[in-house]
Image 1 (cartoon, helix red, strand yellow):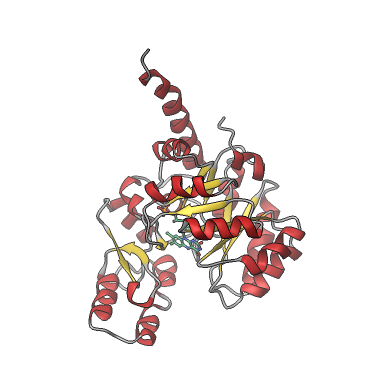
Image 2 (cartoon, helix red, strand yellow):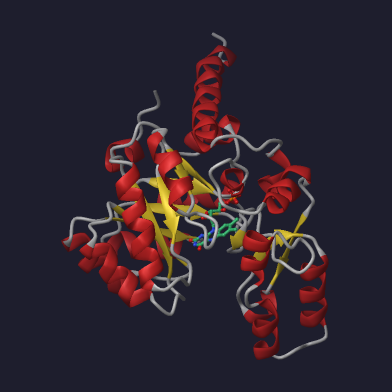
Amino acid sequence: MLKTALTDLVGIAHPVVQGGMAWVATWELVVAVSEAGGLGIIGAGNAPVDFVRQQIRQVKAHTTKPYGLNIPLFSPFVEQVMALCIEERVPVVTTGAGNPTPYIERLKAAGIIVIPVVASTALAKRLERAGADAVIAEGEESGGHIGEVTTMVLVPQVVDAVTIPVIAAGGFADGRGLAAALALGAAGVQMGTRFICTDECIAHINYKQAIVKANERSTMVTGYSIGHPVRCLRNPMAHDFEALEKRGASEQEIIEFGTGRLRLAVVEGDCVRGSLMAGQAAGLVHDIVPAGEVVRRTVAEAEAILRRLPGLIVA
Ligand SMILES: Cc1cc2nc3c(=O)[nH]c(=O)nc-3n(C[C@H](O)[C@H](O)[C@H](O)COP(=O)(O)O)c2cc1C
């Protein structure tokens, strides 16, 4: 067993978090991860509040273990979803895409553990001051919306900048990654891409197979021109997106082009027109297995590595 500040804070057996992913991280995946002793997180994305309520109710109906909900702060329903989390007493809320300071006090007053995603030491420090219980330091290797700094350099600097637990995200897909994250001072890892390729994840099989086939150079980043970079697998959609940006298309044109693309990939399995959001760790994913197996394997491998490492020290 690996006991860390994260396992203590949230009351979970293993320091492995399944990232909240819009469209992808629904209750089936969340339950499987939480039942295995990790922390499953519902991806609320831009979904309306009734859909999110159903997701929470399904998780509650299928597990008594801790779970979380992720809300990207650009969601048009952010206010209602925050209120819903309080009403439903969701144990952990993670936030993406911005500064959740206006919500932290309310969530904490309701006894909710608040863990924002950060891509800089500056935001990590501000959120610690605002009362965040931990932060997820996410490097630019990640799938989906990304920052500018790699995980390897971001995580230790965030660890140095704050006293609350830091969860490392971006580029982790196995126990080697977990052991490395712990060595960097993190209290655990959050994985997204790895958890897409699991039996319980509702993503279309075409999407999962595209990740399994990918290598470390299979992703690219679109959306820099509009200030919303997103990492996804290279495909005709991503290249068309890039071409649009290169020819200086307007922000509105670019946003319209991108809208609905993740749904096309996740729900319809359209690997040509859909956005196959995935991180560089796609190259480390070679199979589609139960989510509980991912948690168990990751922890067992990390433990084996950590037991072996002291042998490197010679008198
Ligand atoms: C398809 C997809 C959708 C995502 N959606 C969200 C989201 O809605 N909110 C969020 O905070 N992070 C989101 N992420 C980021 C993940 O939660 C996680 O932090 C990231 O995938 C970690 O990097 P990895 O892909 O290298 O494991 C998404 C990632 C992917 C791949």
